[in-house]
Length: 129
Image (cartoon, rainbow, N blue to C red; front, side, top):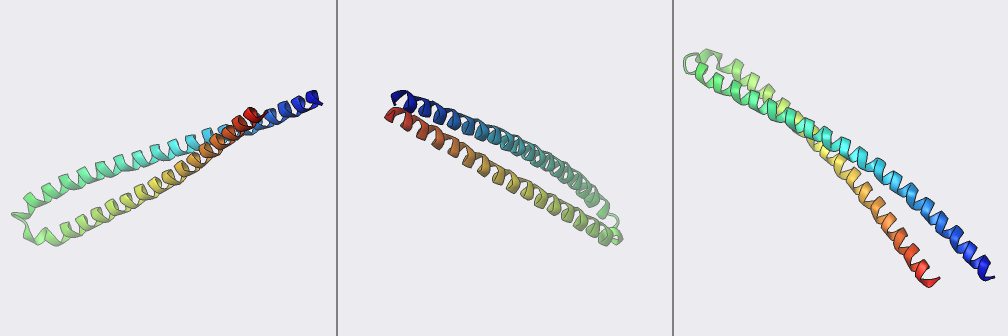
C-alpha cells in the first residue's frame, strides 16, 4: 500500500510538473507578445517624437516667414492644425499600444501567480507526504 501511495504521489507530481511546464510556456508566449507590444509602443513614440521635431522646425520656419508675409497666416495656421491633429492621433495610437502592453503584462503576472501558487501547493503536498 505504501508503494501504491508512492506511485500515486509520483504520478501526481508528474501531472503538476506537466501543468507547470504548460503554464511556463504560456507565460513565455505572453511575455513575447508583451515585448512585441512594448517595441511597437516604443516605435510609435519614436515616430511621434520625430513628428514633433518636424512640426517644431516647420513652426519656427513659419514664424520667420510670418514676419514679412501676414497674408499667408491662415494657410499656415491650418497646416499646423493638421500637424497637431496628426500628433494627437499618434498619441492616441501610443496610448492604445501602452494599454495593450498593460493588458499583456497583467496576463503574464496572472500566469506567473498561477505558476507560483501551483508550485507552492506542490511544495505543501510534498511536505505532507
